[in-house]
Length: 433
Image 1 (cartoon, helix red, strand yellow):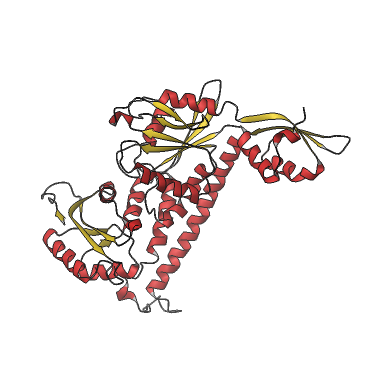
Image 2 (cartoon, rainbow, N blue to C red):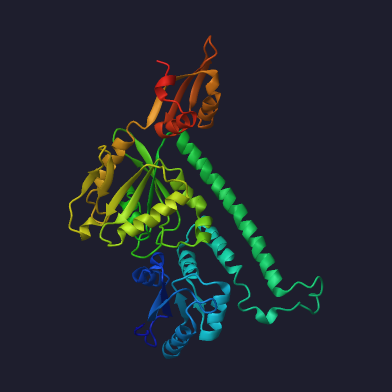
C-alpha cells in the first residue's frame, strides 16, 4: 500500500482517490499498475493511496474480501478521499455493499473510463455515444440512492397506476436510450453515404488504429498538417476525424483518426462507438500505430488486434507504424517481409523523421489499386454482375451474340478480389481482351 501527499488547502480543487487493484490466481488477469494510474490521471483525479491485494477469486459480497475492505476503510479514514476507484468491473451489488462498508463513493473501471469519455467527447455524435454507454451502465445501478423511494408515489397529482420511483427512472432511461439510438442511426446513415461517395470517387481510405496514447493524433496532424487535439493522456481523441491527403502521382487518400483502444474496453463503449469504428472496418488499409519505446507494445498490439478482429476487419491489409523512435535514438526505416512487402515503418510523429518514407510507401501501395477494364461474364455469373452493380463499378454494359455480359468496369482491386473469391474464379478467366 502506498500513500501520497494530499493537495493543500487553497490549491485548485482536484478529486482525490484511493486506488484499489487486485490480482487473482489467473495469468490472464495480471493488472497493469501504470495504465490504471494513467486512467485516473486522465480523469483529472489525484491518488492519495494505492492499495494492492491478491485472492484466489473475487469475493461475491465485497469483491476484495472482508479483511481487505476493513484495510481500505482504515485508509479512507486517514486520507479522506472523494472516491475509491477499483481497477476492475464491479457488480451493482458489490458496488453498493462497498459504498456502505467504506462510507465513501465507489467507482469501478467501467465507470472511470466512461467518465473520461464524457470529458473528451466534443462532437454531437461523440456526446450521444458516451451518453448511450453511460445510460446502459447506469440502468443496472439505479437502486443506489433510491432506496428511500422504493415505495409507490402518492399525493395530489401523483395517484394513479402506482409506479415506483425506480420503475419511473428505468422507463425514462429506456425512452432516452431509444431516442439516442434513433439519432445515432441517422448519423450512421450519413456516414455511410459519405463512405459510398468516397468509394464511388475511388479514393482509398487509410485508418489509424492503435492502443490509446500511442501517438495516432500526433501522426495524423503531421501527415495532414491539421491541428487535431493531441495530448499525453489516455483517450485524448474520441471523435473520428477524416482528412484528404494528396500523394505523389496525382493520387489521394482519406486518412481517418479513430478512438484509441485499451485492455478490457467496456462492452457498452465498443457497442456505442461501433459506428465510429466502422471507418476501420471499411478501410482499404490499416496503419497500426504503436509506441516503439513502450516495453508492453507486444501486449498492446495483441489487445488492438483483438478489437480489430471483433470488428470483422482482420483481413484488411495492415502495416505497423513504430512511433516515437526519437526516444529510442533510432533512424527511420521500413521493414519488409519474406515476400518483399512492407510490414513496419519506423518513425517519429513529433520530430517528423520517417514521415516522408511513410507517405512514399502509401503512394506506391495505392498506385495500382484500381482495376479499369472490360469483363466478359457468362449468364451463370449473374450474381457477380449484381455484385458489381452494388459496388457501382459498371460504367457501361452490352450483351454479346452468345448472351454474355460485356462490362466496362472501374473498381478497387481489393473489392474486385472480394467479389471474385465469393465465386471462386480468377480474374484472367473473365477478362475481355
